[in-house]
Length: 410
Image (cartoon, one colour):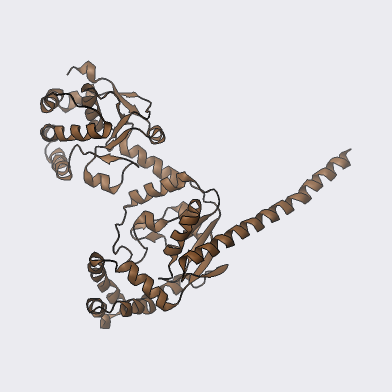
């Protein structure tokens, strides 16, 4: 493959790629990188697996960039047929009958420095037929794959300038610059069903709701990850950025959270919305709260195993005499007794200490989540209608004063 053929690798701006909804969006990073976060709609077709990446990275540090390149070259030749087949399926493209491994060997024969020099980037504009590739920083991984596939005839292949890092910068900027609309915050003791009410409201008024726990994959408590798949900070912020991009044509309704939801830290823009919002208190009888938590935390065998692993931490917080007691209750099938004890001795005192002085403008019984959501919807709509009337009334004297001033000037 001549250097002239490799001089032009089309690269597009990440925002334009996201706006145009290309035919396929391919993440060439390792599965571990992809799992931590990725562009919305992307499919993972890794050039290197997690182990491959670790070996190549070790060689780069302990030996030389050239040693790492040769190892990567060998692994690419071994895996190029599978990668090309997966791309072809996503792009709805027929791969020509050629020796793919030999093509890779020929393309990379000059070593890392020559390949870097040959793979220059040119600005491209994506469209719905584009097949877009990205790696971590828009470097050699993606540019080499794009050049290789374009030589095979996939002329719609292009890359993302700056790779995943440019997307990450866009996400951070969008989240940090977000100005929340008027916010209403659902608060209440553990187990009252704040999430259940929010998700009922989400069915009724999806444009109002911000479900932080769904984005975080966590219930925001010591046991909050049981039965769930916690998101990384990056993935949480990506999900949050996508929700923000959808807009809030009205208020924002959100659960009251601490600054952390599991290991995820809430951005300042979201924290300001929670702290500055109008608070509602949700209440429910103790037996209802116990039932909600049993159904939520003990939905399956995996949840029981995870809960048993987390309970010793709470036993330690409660004191030495509780060592093994909570785990024993779980293992003996005394789930409801266990949950009631956790509420009365751990969660409720903790909540009252952190939230006890916070004022709430209204109280709703959340025993029936749908009914509570309907009442909250009506309350917010009436409040917003009342605010609109007040705003219009306050504007009348101002207009009258302006008219009087004009008459006086005459």
